Image 1 (spheres, rainbow, N blue to C red):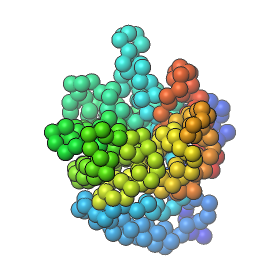
Image 2 (image 1 turned 135 degrees about the vertical axis):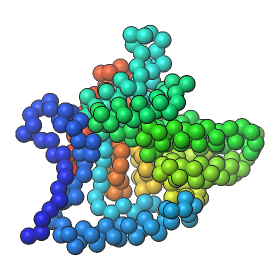
Image 3 (image 1 turned 180 degrees about the horizontal axis):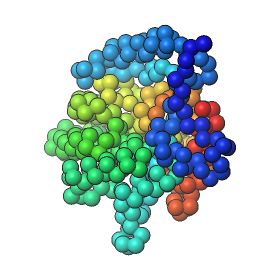
Image 4 (image 1 turned 30 degrees about the vertical axis):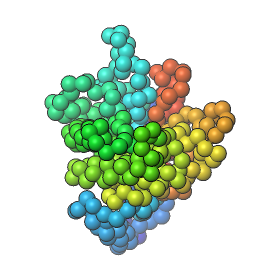
Length: 344
């Protein structure tokens, strides 16, 4: 009988009700399970690892330029790591009341206390004068709390005419790539941009693709992915998003899949089409079909969609509803955690 290597959280009933979060805090990577459902011999494991390595080397990762990307081919089974976006507490980061104001260190503490493997540190909530010392302190604090920085997010616009304004947007994204490397974020959410008024949408798409390629070249040098979000504008439709993603010649670009941002006739279908390109997934609590009112998001359906795409990575709660996040977020994280563990 071959020996198995099995690393898994499986924090089930033996740990007692209410102790799941503390168990997860101790393990930054609780979803790793190499043994899966059947024995894996050393020979088969090494064979699969070599095959995966060959697939990666075929991308030419030593050079950041590559062919236009295809859906990610991940070996093994789906794996999800729970994270929380700082944007969920946006009002408290911006609060002028000292007693109610939240900072990123406290946010990381909240993530640790509620069993999150990751924390998405939105760029908007870093101090304006933050520098290397602040970024490395954030990284240190997250490590000591057993929380990974799952990513960050910037608010750029690449759908601009060529010129100084577009160049400034590119410089700012590159600046945040450098910052992300310091505080340990492996992924940055980026936007394409709104439908422009001063140039054609065709030109806007072309400029966006070129800007993404330039930024991906810089990001790849730091080992950081850029995730293009389905965020309205020139990527409001799945076809428009995939057109841009497929055109960018870089292995360091993917989709930041926001489950609440396709307001089309078939939001779930469009999400499923984009899921194979996902490098990060942000869960919203509502979905809205074209011409319809918002409806509660079907979390089990979303997780099943990601399993079918063999997604492996962070699932990030980005809470935007009206209810107080201090009350709503813990319950939603618990629901997501249960859905992750249901098929582990």
